[in-house]
Image (cartoon, rainbow, N blue to C red):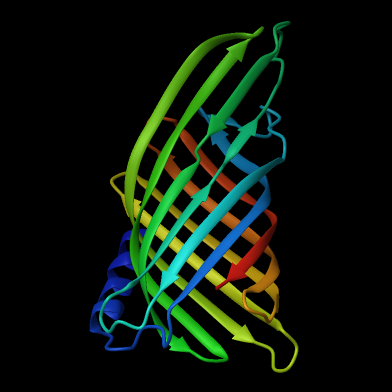
Length: 234
C-alpha cells in the first residue's frame, strides 16, 4: 500500500470514529537521542560508496492532552537528522565530503481512542522538512541544495502497560506523502515510568525511517538505529 492510500484509509478511520479523548488533562514531554545509520543514495550515488557514518541526532516532543470532547490533543515534535560522509572518487586525489541535513518538525492533532492499560492514539498532522545537502571538495563547497517542503501525515501510537511493573511496551507509525516525496517512520519501544507528582521515566527503542525522493535533495534513504528518550508526564 502506498503512503497516499494509507493516509486516505487512516483519514476515513479517524473521521468515522466517535471515540473519546483523554479522561484528564496532562502534559507529556520527551528529550533524547537517536543513533541513526543511513543506506540508500544521494545524487544517484550509493551512500555506502560515499562512506556515510552513523550519527547521534537529538529529538524532542511536547504533547498536551485534555478532556474536552471532539477537540483533538496536540503533539509537537522536532527531530535533528544530519549525516556526513567522506570518500575519494575513483582515480581522484581530492577528498569529497557529502553532508545532508533533513531535520524536521511535526505538528499532530490526535485523539486517544483507548486510554487505560492499553492506549491507542490516532491523528493527522503536518511535517516540515527544512534542510540542506552539501558537497565539498578539498574543503570548498561545490554544491549546495536546500529543501523546504510540507507533507500531510497520519499518526498512530499504541502502548501496553505491563501490570504492577511500571514497564510498558509500544509502537508508533507516522507516514506522509505529497507529489513525488513520501516517507514512512516506524518505531518500537520499552518504557519505565516512576510514579510521583510528575511521572518521570525513560524509553529505549528502535526507529526506522524510509524517505523517497525528497524534493530538491536528490535523496532516497533509509535511516535506522536505536534511540533513548527521557520522559516526563505532568
